[in-house]
Image 1 (cartoon, one colour):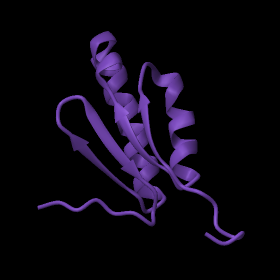
Image 2 (cartoon, one colour; image 1 turned 135 degrees about the vertical axis):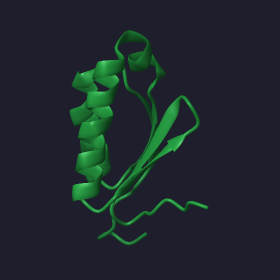
Image 3 (cartoon, rainbow, N blue to C red; image 1 turned 180 degrees about the horizontal axis):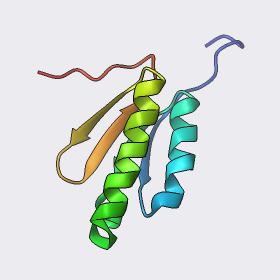
Image 4 (cartoon, rainbow, N blue to C red; image 1 turned 90 degrees about the vertical axis):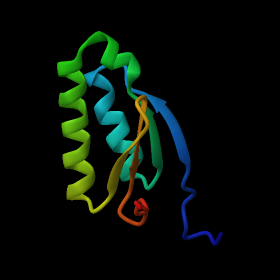
Length: 87
């Protein structure tokens, strides 16, 4: 990696409340891939979960990234440079 490139990471994060959405957006905006566990918020409020996923989906699509579900408990969000392969 040369000095002009920044490190990018795959980060496993947990969505506990709507207040987590901005920090998740920041991670994706920094070029990181986020694997997001959504069950803690789903257990507390399905409506808040829907709102959070809607906000994240809109953000990722606007920046040219991608979003997909990984089973019942997780979603993956990627920056513009990374696309999710689907069958």
